Image (cartoon, rainbow, N blue to C red):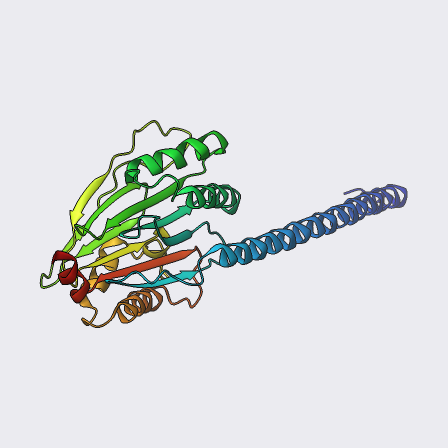
Length: 297
């Protein structure tokens, strides 16, 4: 480095100028960061408000009272997710009072959920007028209304089943990822209600199909949306469908409410969270003894 005082002064002046430029740039970056943070906070607040509104809407739309169907007992639970959701369920009698339907659905986001809910409500209100339709035909109607409006990677899962109390046959159609199990009284093994088609999405081109099972006294049907099995523990490992089945199998043989609570408790114990990240819906249905016997006379 030169010992020339003038050269040193010039160098110091250059450094001071560079420092002033850097400080000006830093100030500008801080202002831009502050504005970006404000925008981000506003977006987070808006998303939070929309999430709260969606949760409130879903709670209002979910049935608060279940029909009193002779020969059957129901226990249901809907837990809204803290980050995402899209679940809906309903249990309703047909105009033919010896038939009733069970509907449970989930969607990947609240935007699609709102659409799906409106379509489901529309179909549910018309269900009696369309009495006698097979399960897969009802799902086909839902699919035709939903598919044209699905955006990007949105997916929807629907399970619809009809119980005929004349024969105690349960006909169902399941598209997507709704867990369904038939717990046969007196047997240890669970029968899985296999999906009859993929979830609804832009690539959906499947003709839904129905399946039929026979219900007997004290049999149970357990239906759950994917929010239950997809809940994760602290290591990020999902609970999985096998743990859903394990919780059902290990639960004491008590009432439907006790079984529902045992499943939810096992899930909460695994995840370590009181409130699920994603919506969870659980429906437990049990066939009772005496009305079946009367129906056979």
